[in-house]
Amino acid sequence: MSERIFTSPAKYIQGKNSINNIGSYVKEIGSKAAVIADEVVWDIAGHQVVDALKKNNIDATEILFNGESSEEEFERISQEAKKAGATIIIGVGGGKTLDTSKAIADTLNASTVIVPTAASADAPTSALSVVYSKEGAFEGYRFYNRNPDLIVLDTKIIAAAPPRLLASGIADAMATWIEARAVIRNGGPNQVGGRTTLAAEAIAKRCEEVLFEYGHLAYESAKVNAATPALEQVVEANTLLSGLGFESGGLAAAHAIHNGFTALDGDIHHLSHGEKVAFGTLVQLTLENRSLEEIEHYIDFYTSLDLPVTLEDIKLKDAKREDIVKVAEAANVNEETIHNGFDVTVEEIVDAIYAADQYAKAYKQKNNL
Image (cartoon, rainbow, N blue to C red; front, side, top):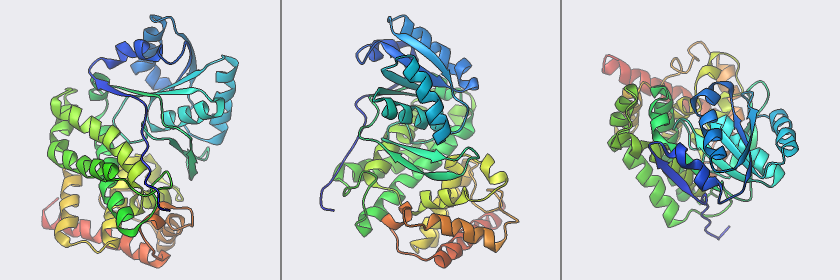
């Protein structure tokens, strides 16, 4: 592996009321679309997208997403979109809807348009989908030959989303630089099988800087549904900077730990992707033998955004050791991203999970949290 590889979407558009202009952008791509959204999102933005498309003479078929980015859902929706003759697949909603839309577009060799309704994850820009079982257990990744053709973020809609979703996106994005630097340090591959470019390294690092600088302001803005300049900065960091940074920079232990958690049953599945990544990030910092000062810097930031930092916070207070071993085993399988930056044993991962939990508990106790 000697080639440096950088990948990105063709066009990214972000701003207040951007969704109203989506028809003018999509008509440059084609004239027959399938729009995919779940039951809730249809009322938030789905119908608005369809109306904007029709004003530009674009035929739009509405397809209901059932909630899980599974192979079964990919097959079902692919058949519906194919029957409609769609040459453009437009996903509107959260991460699993968007991942499903990318899978459908790849299956049908159609163009991909992504319309996030929250800045809750960095999935929108990437050329991959995370695949889960019908029950919600992590199964793996699907990789595609190209990134989405168009991403449109309406920050007025995103500002109206629950603040918890923005905080979740911040947690997901905070892992970007931490994981990328581990990949760079250990010479591991990025998510497109190459070495990390200087551009990806710079983007990943800037992502973290923006989040530390504007994260609190954006979170408070979201509490009053205000699309402030700070919110705009964080939406871009959560989506574009993190998306480019993780894909062209690389993933490591933080996301592998997240994936390991999907091996468990119970209330942990009620947590968002980013909330589980937040704890996974602390585990990675522990594996890296980072200083107390650095680890507490992240714990302080996460807790100020009401993000989970202990096993109790992620609904695993009563988890038995064999459960944590199961998480570590799933995080350390051969195909997991932990190997991009680390050579560790299951036992070392288990110890890091317990240690990260204890570090956060001690921080909370010290600060009366």
